[in-house]
Image (cartoon, rainbow, N blue to C red; front, top):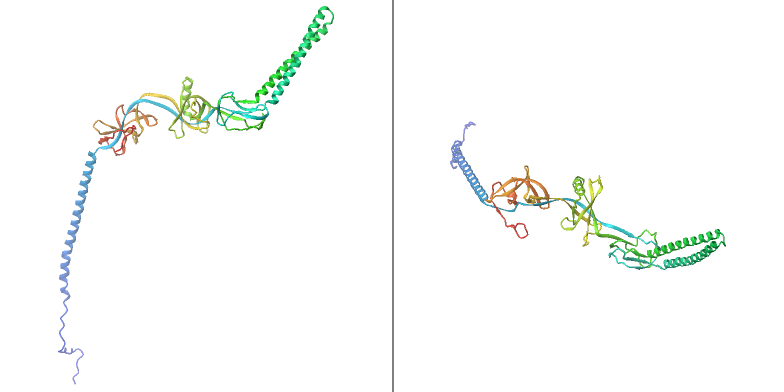
Length: 419
């Protein structure tokens, strides 16, 4: 038996099909190179198209913005305007004030006794001399009658002494009696005359005490709440008054102003000028009454740096009430013929105060101004505008130099009607 070599390949059986040979690895390389050739041009084309569309949209946005800007430049802005007027500008000094009764009286009894009548009503306006309270007068009437009786007795004694003095005078003239008896009788007559004078004083005192039983109003004013009732026994030494009366016509107001403003006020007072003072309500909107400055306090409050002033008001309508809080305006002077603009027209910037002036061609120009005193809704302008020019009072935030405007018509209330 022949021995086969281990390297000898056995023959392939005849019944097996032949398998196709695997493709050579070198056949895949041409196909991959063709794919890389067309993908880069596609990416470049897509990027170019996207860039073109972005550039086209930007161009459209710029065109739209330019068109809107052109329309905005050509469109007139609606504003409110008011003319610069020439008039009088009042100069006021303002201060917080408190209404104070011109006089306040605590009515107290002068004698002791029970109350038998109260003649006033709470809150009533009483006049000087009106009866308020009646104290039982009977003990004082008895004292008066007693004093009058004592005077009558002493008058009788004086008359008897005077008759005896006449007799002694005749006897002295006849040389019957001594001079000493005549002088003694004359002294007795003088003694009784002095007693009569004391009796008259006692009568006057009794009448005075009797008059004190009728407590009357010492001045005209408004009476407060009732302090006593009928049947109460009151004494002159009681701490509580029978009634409290405050004089409210006229009435005074104490208010303060800064100490720096005191010298012009003092100069006016020394010159004899009557300075008017207006009292406004707590909101400082409605005027309550008008009076005149009476005087200035004699010292400055160092804690607040203010000085107190006193004004007098007639208060005929009783609009002012004691301890009422008011806002006071002291008219120091009035400047005549100055240019005045509304307060909303004045704007402030880095260059100072300015206004927008409406020119005849319906365009606006910004103009710097110099302001003076501001009072309420009016501002004094010393330079920059002239009377008759139109200044914008509303809508300044949309304006530019040379921009076109359309002035809104004024309404019936004196303002402007908004579109």
